[in-house]
Image 1 (spheres, one colour):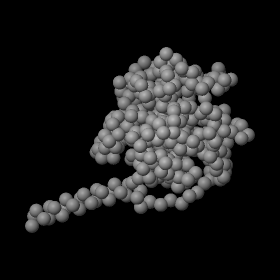
Image 2: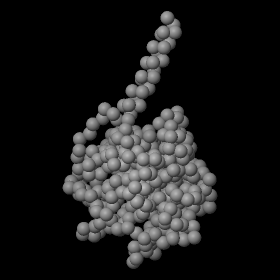
Image 3: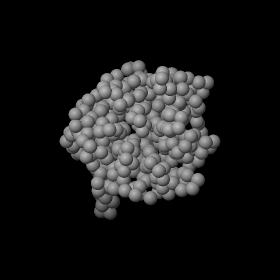
Image 4: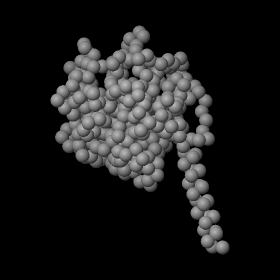
Length: 371
């Protein structure tokens, strides 16, 4: 009798755990499509706009062709079949009919564009010199993970490679946020480079193997650890707060910077959706995020990008540096017809630009009262 009771209890626990996984994956979730205004796909950028950063003067630098060691075989075959390479595009909000323009990557002895797979991006704007210095995560096909430093040459639409940064604490990185020249925070996203092990790391381990790193100009150090797949990040305008998305937990961590650029966690805001990359609004009073609302469809899409996945854009209002969860709004939702697997979003002068992991780039008109 006791053995039977224990067996029933064990089966009940297993079913409970499996149902939790099913519910979290969004199997029973349904959304209704809505846009903030007319939307259109940007021509010429068909295979990914994973992350973007918008400058004060309205230039959006966009990374395309993300791929790293832990990606599925189906994903890598899709890239190879379609001849997809790592590239960086420019979208100028100031043009009357802007389109995405590919930037030429100027190589150096430490950087070969043929092995380039960009991911997260952050920009250092020098208002005195009128220069843009671009820092980009690179999952290089040959060699170790790196952060690449470029100088934008606007006359020729080129990115001149200046320097590469590497370190043993970098496993599979995701995004970065620039504090000053050659000083930045970086999210160490995954520990395992094997696809199967990375899935176990993200879905089944009771503890996180990711970390948040800081580079001081010469060395990397760990400023937070035990994180579940830390993803996109950005800084407040005064660089007092750092925002870090944790999609596996549907949360965004808010850190306050202290002396020596150490961090203190002051908030973990639950979003009810998987926020990917984060972008600060022009006014600095909100974050925008491309988000993945239904997990199981995202998983299928990342195994076979021909299968659509829904896209969502969230607006996360800020007050005194913290996110106000009860005032979070969804600005955009699409089933995957217009854009699949949205990964980033930004608004500039009432235009919403939405990027994707390995799909389209979309721009929408938005009303002034929602930005």
